[in-house]
Structures are given as C-alpha cells and as structure tokens.
View 1 (cartoon, rainbow, N blue to C red):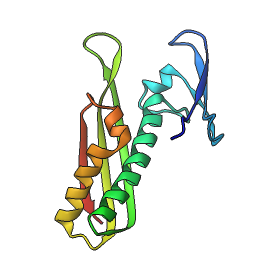
View 2 (cartoon, one colour):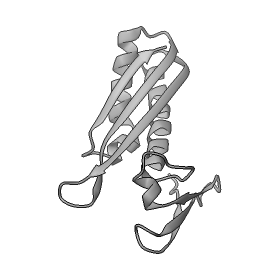
View 3 (cartoon, helix red, strand yellow):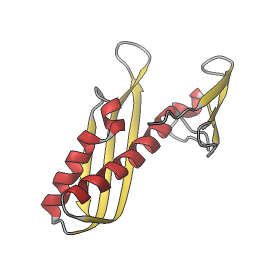
View 4 (cartoon, rainbow, N blue to C red):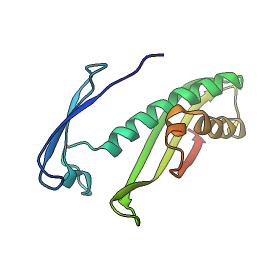
Length: 145
C-alpha cells in the first residue's frame, strides 16, 4: 500500500506565525494555516489540522461504510458523512482533540434501518482513520435518509 504525504512550511511564533500546508502526494491543494484562526470560532478561510482530520475521517468512514454495507448484502446508493472534530484545552497543558462526532445519512438498498445502523457501527470500528484516532471519543449518529 502507498504512503501519502503532506508538508507544512511555518514561519514565526505560535500566536503570530503562519503556515502553508501542501498535499504533496496528490497535488490536490495547498492551504494556509494559523493558530489564531485554528482556535477561533470563525476560520475566515484558513484551515486547521482539525479540519484536515475531519476531511480524512469523513472520507475514510464513507469508504469503509460502503464496503460494510456491501458485505451485509446491501447496495449503498448514497452516503452523506460529516465529521466534527473539536479542539479543547488539555488539562495536562496545551490543547487536545476532545472528540469527533460522525454523522451519516444513507440511501441504501437491501438493508433496513437496523441493518444500516449495524453496518454504520461496524464501519466506525473498522475505519483506518478511526483506528488511528484510538483514545479520542468518536460518536456516531447514523440513519437512513
């Protein structure tokens, strides 16, 4: 399996510095980052590690869920997945990701609501990004659309 890479160039202090993240494996994009925008409610067009984790988690989870649905005998017609990653102060100092809330609404043929929920829970456990984030509380809100 391949290794994927990104790189960040950072200039300045934490609170006054700025950075630029580049998705080097795919060349799919480059994004500005800054700690003040990371810690603010309004990102003002600047991304953060938490948003990038949310993107990774929602896409990985959607792929894993489509596989689990097929294994259960269903056909995924459409899956809408969001991941909300929360950054909070860490009692031990600094900051930490305090939780991730996954939300999925699915259009699926061949599975009822209970079957979809079972597949959704299984996908949460089997998703490689979920596995990488062990130690962070991940909640799931799953339902058929």
